[in-house]
Image (cartoon, rainbow, N blue to C red; front, side, top):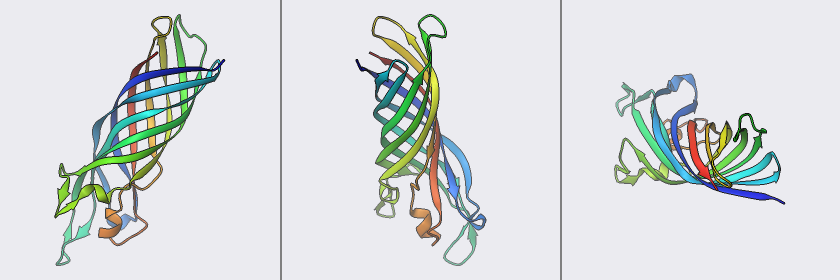
Length: 202
């Protein structure tokens, strides 16, 4: 008989931008951003050591970047942006569990993807710049690949604690602003994140 385990998770996250652009734009990562993810997770076991894992997670991502451009008079400038975007994530993954590696302790490995929906955004701590909402410059949806692993600890008959590390690799462009301001449709900005996932399942 299939078993479902539902839990709560808190997930501190370090994220930074990745770039697909010509060298002439000289995009640089100026620093990562520490965010937080919180949400509900659910593991649906279709075999003893295999589970389909999903949930709903609110997570903040972003980071600082700079790039080469010119001002109205043609002089070279180097703008810098501190981007922060909040998403609701719907992970769709497969979890593989070991047998006990110690009394009440098992390891798990997780692989899959996530479809994320933007809910809010800021640029340089501002929600409105030059009369326009900055959230409009970011894509409504983001797709991630997910790879992670961790451990679960049996704390009672039906209660488990878990802790793991997950890599989230953005697959889709999240920001059209740089395509427009640099007049190059080949530019893409994507997220890369590492999260520490800690929670309890029932």
